[in-house]
Amino acid sequence: MRYSQLVLVFILSGTPLRAQDQPEGPKSEKAQKSYKEALEYVHKHRTDFALDSFKKADRQDEARCTACQKKMIQYGLELHDWKAAQTAAEEMVREARGDKTVALAHFELGYVLFTEGLDKHKDELFTRAHDEFTKSLASFGNFPEAVLSNGRALAHLKQDDAAKAQFEKYVKMKPESDPLRQRVLRYISEPELARARMAPAFAVDTLDGQHVSMDDLTGRVVLIDFWATWCGPCREALPHMLQIAKKFQGQPLVVLSVSLDSDEQKWKEFIAKNNMTWLHYRDGGFTGSLANLFGVKAIPQTFTIDADGVLQDQHIGDASIEGKLKKLVARAQELQATQKPLQ
Image (cartoon, rainbow, N blue to C red; front, side, top):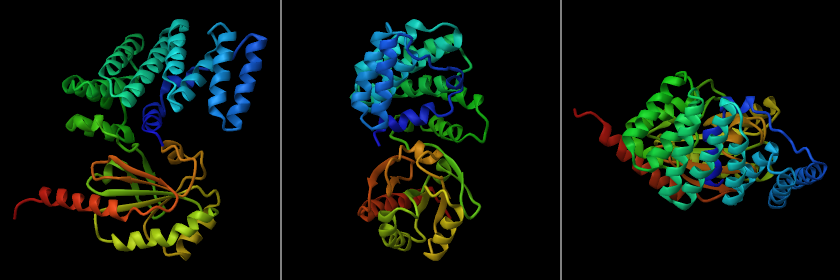
């Protein structure tokens, strides 16, 4: 998963204004034909051709096809076609009417610039993103995701005091149960984390009844394993996962297996039969909340996260990860040792 995709999910999941914003499809007959063609390419997983067709439909509709523009942003980001994504976002800004729609349009443009900044490591892009997020909030102040994104842009510009002020504002806007709020509290005390490649914030209730959130696991290495009982390669990789769990037992490593099974009983029976004694959560499929959050399109797939919550590695298939885990666990043990009170 590209970092930009991860950040897109992290920032945009649950954005309140998005549910109110119904994309307007193309009006002209030619544009409708091109838009339909683009959707067919999406269905065939030809996102490069789809993007070209969405751009064509938007041109044929005189740059007023909101649905086309949203798809141009989505696939422009995925394919790193920054020009297409930025053009679409700028068109949305020009056509936006009403405070909420204007706020969302500036947010979309800010997000495109922010993501391009992550990819190209250019402060100019973070500055422009900050300007767009500021315009978004000027139009509609009750927009937590714009506040958070503004803080992240400022953090990347090393303006930590200004970033902290945005993070504190965001925390006040969210309930204590919100996993992102928990993450942002860490940004306030450790602003350098807002510049890191952090794993997505989430919270789940595991099979054994534990409530587990990503940020509750700070100080421990986390290995997230996406799998399913119906997946042949996953079953073949199971002995390796059992070996890892046994090897690192009692050490600061948490294994969380996320199943894409739809059959709950079959999933439970498989876990019990194979003595899979670590944490388990059933996500239900590729459209599940965690699969979507991590951008999982193939299994088995693992994500290795360090003691600070920073994403270190991602592997599709059964990969040799013990060496990396050993180093990360050793560092976690060192951190734990330094945090112990003096006797």
